[in-house]
Image (cartoon, rainbow, N blue to C red; front, side, top):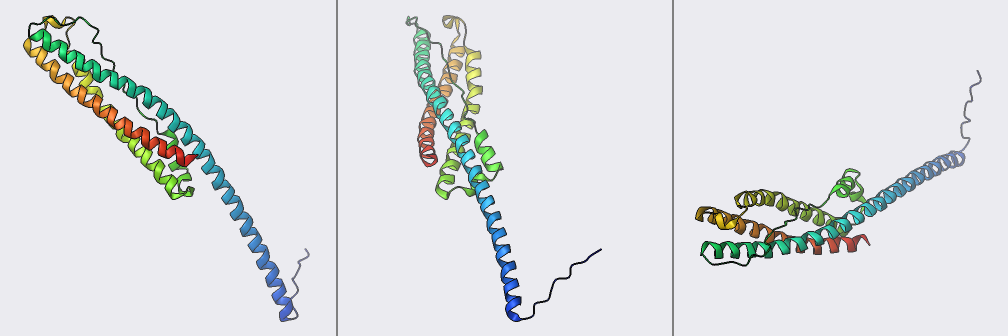
Length: 208
């Protein structure tokens, strides 16, 4: 087997030339590696931005529809309360439709969770990452409120009789209490949702 033995440099100049060649080769390799890594990070961030933009826009559109339903629900709860009050006082209330529809839409967070898991967030500018973090923190707060609101809505439905005129004073009082609680949740949902729309707008601006 032939073994190649490298020649020893005959002078300091030759030695420095060989060292320089090796150093330049290493620097080129490191630069290429850094370039490839930077390109990978850029692609990761751009994909994350596209996913986040799509999710935030979907959340915003869904939230606007949900808030319209919640505002209608507040008005319906007011009519229902007034109707029961009139009936319990022996007054003939208007026989209008007092059906209540409350929207329990929750905001999606899958794109945000993916962005955090892939560490794409670490390669975004600070102000952009901060706006996104605030948007999704506010989303979680809104979702928590929606989850809390489900129970009193079910309880209110359980207290309502098919014929409100047949309800006892105790039933009316219990239903009025449930109406007040649901009205509080619906009003808070509207206020929180309106603030969330503004937070979404600021985050979407950063993504543009």
